[in-house]
Image (cartoon, rainbow, N blue to C red; front, side, top):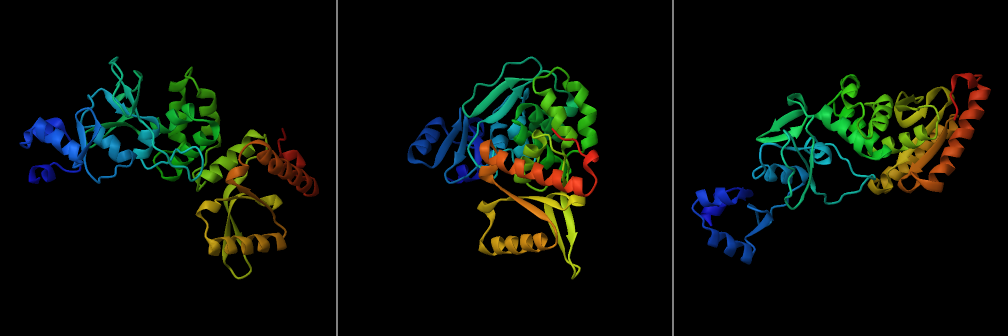
Length: 312
């Protein structure tokens, strides 16, 4: 057991043999639940919970050097959430690509592919594990994911200062002809580092796809007492706000504060539209988009700013 403790939370068969264990020892420990198998030749101690990054680092112990962690898994390594909807969490296979014209991995728990156009600047070593660099990962996701997820991922990279919009724009020519490049360009063009959550990014993409003008993120509103409100998305000049309500994360106190804040805004001439998780697609999304379009047109006319907006 001391030999097993010395191996750490995850280890390979080769590491176990070097520590003095035998294949019979490993079979016995698998049988009694002391360890569990992650994939061929790779084990974890009982009770060790591995997140995506932990699994990626563990698999790096057994993968050949020509395999690179990429896409969603690389984003997780960099701390970027790429789940399809706010609050969604689920187990995914590790995203890996083979380079240098080598064969893809077929290991359990891995989603393998081939990507021979990666350069040395596209790859960063995390420990001994090669991972696509933040700029490369952001652009790969912008090509690969659906529109809302693509925008949310890129805006998270920008917000975390893992990449800049200028860096993304500079790399776009390399992606010419790649599947998904049209969406990638669209996402990079509208991405903003001040968007603070996945839900806000999703809401922003729904607005964009409806052909409405782009709202500003994180607009500050000054109260009479000198305190400030921050609005998720807003057309400041027209006093129209769009708030994403992540109710799954809000307790009673936060809901009460949101209600009071929105009442104050309405009392001071703001029009506030609240969007929830189940209103990001279909008829539910179209309902608030129609409401937003109508109020923008009405207020733009009254403010004599109609000509400054582009309407779909």
